[in-house]
Image (cartoon, rainbow, N blue to C red):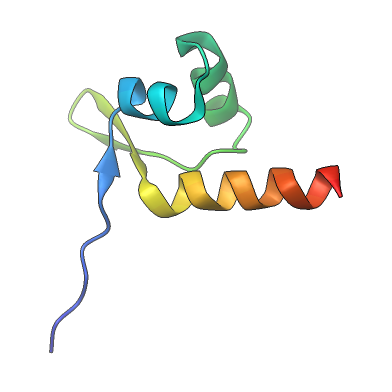
Length: 62
C-alpha cells in the first residue's frame, strides 16, 4: 500500500507562486482561506491547498 505524501511549500514559496506579500499570505492562513500545518516552528502549506485557493477564487469571480 502506497500513499502519496503531499508536497509542502514554505510561506516564501507560496508568496512567489501567488505573487502576494508575506502579510497577505499569513492573513489568508489566519482566516483559514489557505490551509496550512505547523512543522516544528515552521508553517507549511500543501500544494493542494494553494490549488484549492486559486480554484475557489476563480469560482467567486465568475
